[in-house]
Amino acid sequence: MNFLTSGGNPSFADPDQLLEVLQPDRCPLCFLVRAYIYEHLKSLLDESVNDPATREKLFHSKGFCRRHAWQGVHQRQALGMAVIYNSLMDKWLQELPPKTRRFWQSRKAAECPLCESEKVRDLTAVREFVRCWSESDKLRGAFSEKGILCLPHLEKALGQKMNASARKTLREAGEKALKRLIKDLNEFLEKQDYHRSQESLGKEWDAWIRAVRMVSGEKD
Figure 1 (spheres, rainbow, N blue to C red):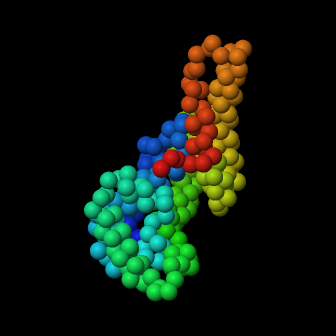
Figure 2: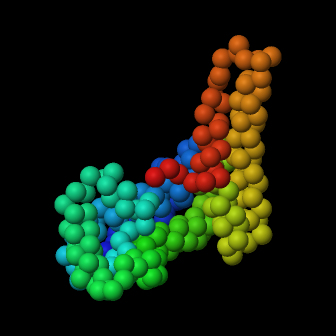
Figure 3: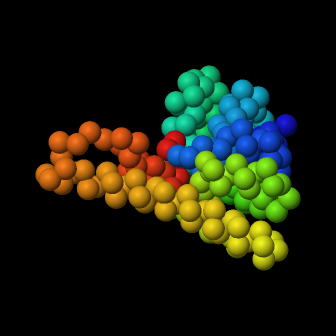
């Protein structure tokens, strides 16, 4: 099986699955897509390192992108990474032109296959979240209490087709959650001023980390 194009295929269109991962400090869509890519990469390195189609695609992309390559390293997938990169380096050396050393720079790399897969799953996650939002009172209620979407996913979700009522409630809930974060962030900043520097930090202590997460996404 070519896991670069298939991989695992968990559904995001289950309100209960979304309810399980709702947290006031993380975007559930970032979390689920990141978890999917982690398992996708693990499956590839466990099962597809000798697949000719997988190797050929990775050759044209010059391996994984830096982010996904180091995710493979951090997963401690030594054997799978060694097999793939040994094959890639050997093939590149065989195709190195005899009179020039500009082979690496001259060939434009295709997109990292895991980046391609990530984009597809991200869009799927957004569409299925919107479907759940439109159909599940339980999800809307729980999200209003403790959910939050990062700015990119909130924008993508609001750009999907849905009825006016669902769009209004999603926008309101999304803005409410982000405003709570901004309130904590302002409290954190105020306590950096020397007038309040002796005050201990409360729940706002990590507001700046949460703000990074909401603007830039989950860390790798």
